[in-house]
Image 1 (spheres, helix red, strand yellow):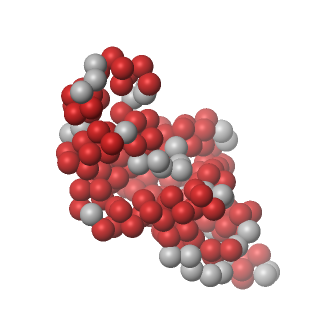
Image 2 (image 1 turned 120 degrees about the vertical axis):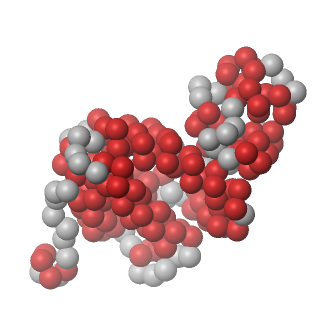
Length: 187
């Protein structure tokens, strides 16, 4: 894992190969392939990422189209619901923001493994822009709720956050869905 982390930090996600990681670890590339299906899995494991974005995106896109936003938001909140996962995501955020190479590796991973997957599955105009705008909501949610822990969002019930953020993500991705406001719901 140290070899993978070092390779990703030195060369970024795009320019790192499983062969290069094997070479740095001084092992046969077949051994790396035996334990890891692909580069994205190794990236997530090497950084001990509590989220599995490719699987989450695939699950969300496989469900009802009108629930994509809520499914993604719920999956993220559930994945980060334990204190250990929340602490790990705080560490990842600090690393990505504090080190250019770590930030670049994380950005390249998100673009390649998450945004491109969402954009290619959407049959809407400006799919890449829509996926990127949805990502701003998701990254912002993670940063504010788990990174800097701003109240009342940091302790808001999961269902409440899904109810408020899910439709925003849905709207960015697909251009439809209501965005509830307290005024609209009578709260």
